[in-house]
Image 1 (cartoon, rainbow, N blue to C red):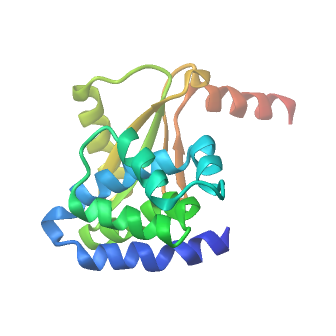
Image 2 (cartoon, rainbow, N blue to C red):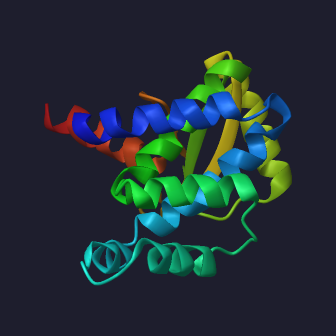
Length: 177
């Protein structure tokens, strides 16, 4: 979706430039929350209704948000809604996070695990992965029971798959070849 990325880029860059370095983490947090809300198909259908005003859409989104939105978030959300760019909000969040990571020299890593991981195990995995990938990682765990055991890690376009499921697939290919 090059069009969505093209629409989202100026918003993400403007928000990034307007945010002071110490506030990047909190800005990314509220932007991710707004992006999650904006990705809801029912909300998008509501926002596309011609009888619904921009202030009504704003009230619904700000009412659904778990945390109280700071003034910067409220102003940003108003600008996005008034310019009819609500569908691009998830991409804006992705591009903002990429800019933030580029400045800090880190990357986002998603660890897929068949079982919940406690904080000590996650810290060990994060340290090992940072050595493996050679950079600071922002690790997030997502459950995936189909893996059976082990983990699968996605860092950008790189994938490290040490799951039992992947090993069984490798054995299957080797036996049938």
